[in-house]
Amino acid sequence: MQNTTKISKQLSFWLRHCPQDAGLVLSETGWADVGAVLKALETKGMSCNAARLGQVVASNDKQRFELSQDGSSIRARQGHSVQIDLELAPVTPPHTLFHGTAERFLSSILDEGLKPMRRHHVHLSGNPDTALKVGKRHGKPVVLLVDAERMVAEGHLFYRTENGVWLTSSVPVGFLARNSGKV
Ligand code: HQG
Image 1: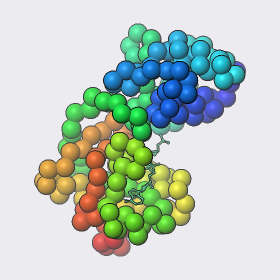
Image 2: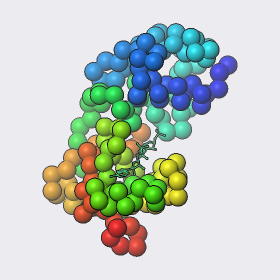
Image 3: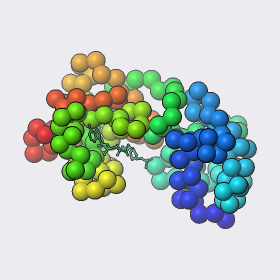
Image 4: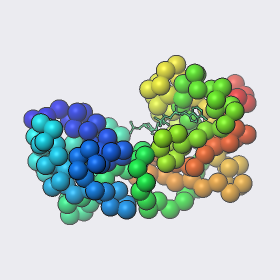
């Protein structure tokens, strides 16, 4: 059976960024047909059946995907660059959230604040450890503190995905700090 991580990475690519690579069509809310996904995996030499796909979804370390109740559709829970509506309702965040990034991005972040870059939203973490891991993906990590409480007071909206990632449209620099003080 095909390696779980390999299937998971392929699913992330298709369901977040490039459904056309697999001939998939996502619904407005990001769902793809499981039968079509299994066929596409087969074409890529990653043989998989519905039960195996269920295991890949259930065992995913960050719970990146979800299956519809009847098992006929699958979608990514966050991280899209393709335009879809995740149907999330705004929720009140904890007073501080965290963003892990790399040192080399700091000067640009200081100029522009946090921007979604190629995704739909800026991704924030509920705790500094998770943010550190996210930052390490990009280089020497830095964890920024986000004054979510004041952002809410000033009208910014926050969303929380089912796998615990906090999303917002952007974070202006005035809401950012480092542990040592203001950035
Ligand atoms: C940086 C993973 C320059 C930003 C994680 C980040 C997350 C700027 C990078 C999810 C900037 C974008 C997302 C600015 C932001 N100037 N750089 N103005 N504003 N940046 O990968 O947050 O494994 O798109 O700091 O767990 O690192 O994919 O975002 O370093 O939840 O499921 O631009 O990806 O989840 O990088 O990670 P990304 P991210 P998955």
